[in-house]
Image (cartoon, rainbow, N blue to C red):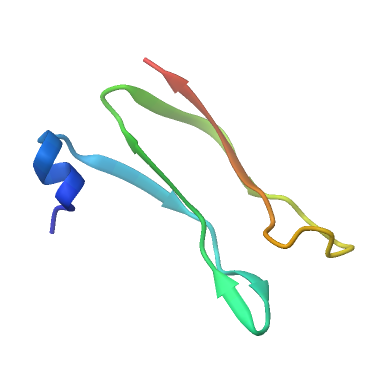
Length: 67
């Protein structure tokens, strides 16, 4: 099923999501969403390891380039 954004633009969107993150009482996923016609995923989709629990929401990063 296409999303409303895909239907509006006529372009397929690509996505990448993190695993479930957060504390035991609250968990969420982070996601990147892009058009492959203009953006390419390069590498490095990682979640920052926060061993001391400093971040309320752990950073999720990846490297992209525009075509």
